[in-house]
Amino acid sequence: MLEYANLKALAVVVSEGGFDRAAKVLHITQSAVSQRIRQLEEKVGQSLLIRSNPVVATPTGKRLLRHYSQVQLLESELRSELDADDPNHPTTVRIAVNADSLATWFLPAIAGMFSRHAWLLELIVDDESYTHHLLKNGEAVGCVTTTANPMAGCSSEFLGTMEYLAVATPEFAARYFEWTKASDNTSAQITQAQLTKAPAVVFSTKDKMHEKYLAQYFQMLPGQWWQHSIPSSESFLEAINLSLGYGLVGHLQAKPLIDNGILIELTPQQRMRVPLYWQHWNIKAKQTTLVYRALAATAQHHLQQN
Image (cartoon, rainbow, N blue to C red):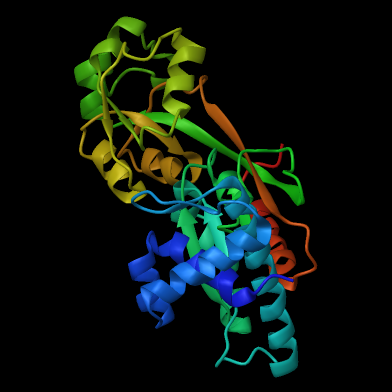
């Protein structure tokens, strides 16, 4: 049997990034934290931490962290059943989600459920193509991801498709793409030569959607365009609204701005479709089941279902 005090020490060391900060969180000495980790490593016969700055878990350490997180969730569910969701011992549910979903449909989908059950929500925000790694590492119990195939020990449920539109302000489009207010926007022709000079706005260096868009529709390679990197959904959209560049914006955010004439769609026939899935651990915890039901119900109204 594994000592759960030792597993907790492992989890806190990784989450805090070091032994000293973990000792403060656990209210014990740093040597006591080190002793607990050493006992755990002796028990499994393998190193569990890479003593870097910050400290990170080894593959074996990540498996133990995943196990510990699953047990925590099941124990929280049992406690809530015995105490009828006692607000003095709220369950914390960790979910990984992409920034675009978080900025639009995600929180309205689950807010009511978390309030009713007095659960605590801990969100980890990352690119939708990376969130499943957080699930795999045990940092989250579920994630919104573009990965359709379920990972080992997990289930995958289709939520819907987010469609991304290439948009810019009319002023930016007139400057870089020779677009005029009187012209027919649906027949505007954007050229590769124009795109090499027009600065793009991308969410982050992790986000490869813009790269895929230019490769798929304009046969462009990385390095053939300029770009601003703005890793904030609100600031990303604001940068486009301020004519700093053009960018790919999810349909839920883009269409109201297009309808109000604030933005125009540059390539209506050339959109990017991103399917989203809910992946979660295969454990009998009501939290992940109820979260999926809430997400699916809201996704039916906001995401495309084909």
